Image (cartoon, rainbow, N blue to C red; front, side):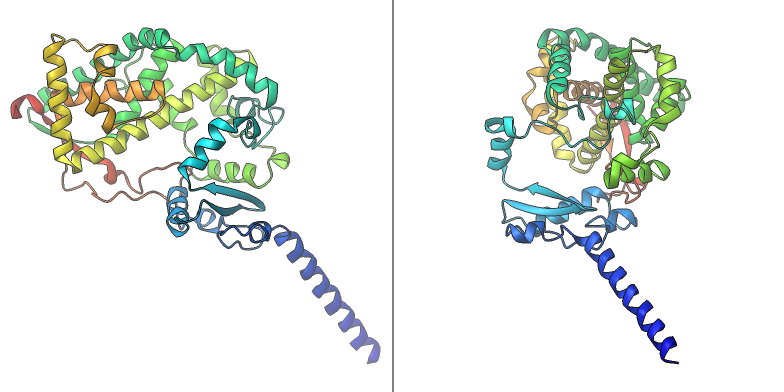
Length: 392
């Protein structure tokens, strides 16, 4: 009997010790911010502050927005990406100091995975470090000089005309002044044609050919839901033990179509594709939504577009778009994406107006199942395109 009791006590003691050790491992650095007197989002063992995203309760955008509002009066706040402490900068002046004055102390992006594990994901400019990053950045910077941007504008202009002609044909075919469409899908097709033409020299029309291989490959490549979300989160948790590549065979199929072989070139081409395909279309999608909801701003922008077209004899040029002050107030971003978005808006709003319809959800809600700022449902980005010429 005594031996049985001792044996039971022995196993209880081992269980307590194991629980304690597991707790230490799961929370060993969760005092990182408290030691530094920085307010932070309270973590849970192993998951850190990631529970809302992991269990699909909140989107990344909502989590960051709530963290900003909660600690708005503080210059810094903290968040735990699983076991890793992440510092949020809430002060614009501090951001300028980090990005400009003290940039030499903050030179590298966080590397989720090495290029040995995933050459496409780990070998692109955003995740390179040290001298290799400097060399690659110096090699790519000339791509976005003013002269190169002017050259690429010709190609963007062609895609803009192609988009406008498609919409005009759509209205003629259906013989009505108002046509309801899902704007995220529409702008994704526009962005796909831009990146295919300007970056890869491939002439396609995703408006008239919605099932072309380049577009389908892009949709698969930029899908960060389901299994892809889990793989990405696996990289965040511990990239060193991840055996799966983030892009895998989907990227291989796309790159075979593009006939790219050199590893460094392929990695940077993949970044161009991702940046051009998804981010620009997302920017345009939400801009169109806000213009539809805020009709006064849309009318003022259309007035500026009309004035520009009268002054240039109906010719849309790089210089004319760059000189549009109100357009610059409506939309802003990095150089190529900004030019791409401006071209789309000028062609779209010169001939059509954006209208709120019954299916339009005025308040934007983000999907908790996607890592990117994707609308909760497609209806959130549905707007009506009304023939602008009949309204004038």
